[in-house]
Length: 80
Image (cartoon, rainbow, N blue to C red; front, top):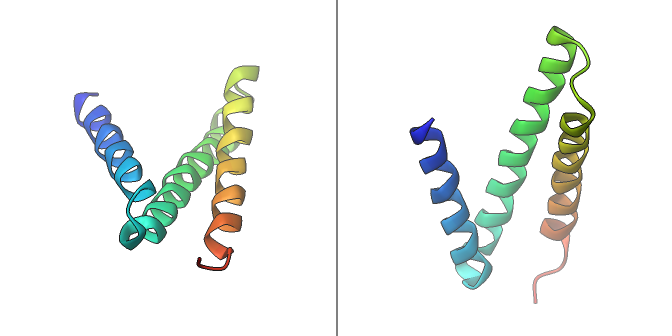
């Protein structure tokens, strides 16, 4: 559990840095898309394998999928 939490904190620190550094902004957006997409895909596999989870976990899955869609939209915006 600690290793995964450390990975989450490291990614969050990178996203924060990328938000204020133009050089890493695209990489930050892409890693956020991959991160949320991986979580959403895992939830879909779990939904198929384990059945319907609690409502709150379904809401999390919808939110993760929304992050992917918004991230793709932001990534495709013209550069300033």
